[in-house]
Length: 121
Image (cartoon, rainbow, N blue to C red):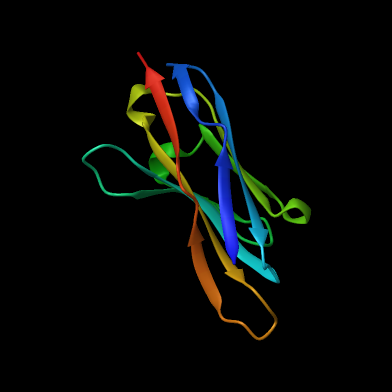
């Protein structure tokens, strides 16, 4: 079984910063892409950023320059540094990872439970 656990959400004032982390654990042979998504109240879940196993990052256009995704493959962990936060960044942030549990296993997409980020004006 594979688990993704997020850390680092909370309440921050506009203009502030937060760093989210997400650690994958359990039966892991290989992790391909990892990423972050978010869902604001009344809205659909949307892409924030993804990063490949080789470290190539992809961002939602509206977030480029403020958010930075990184990963530590040795720790099976992905990070999201969020700077210059705005009230519209308020959402539940979800970690995602594409993981193979063994060398013969298919790759499955796993989700964390989500962590709340609230930005006050």
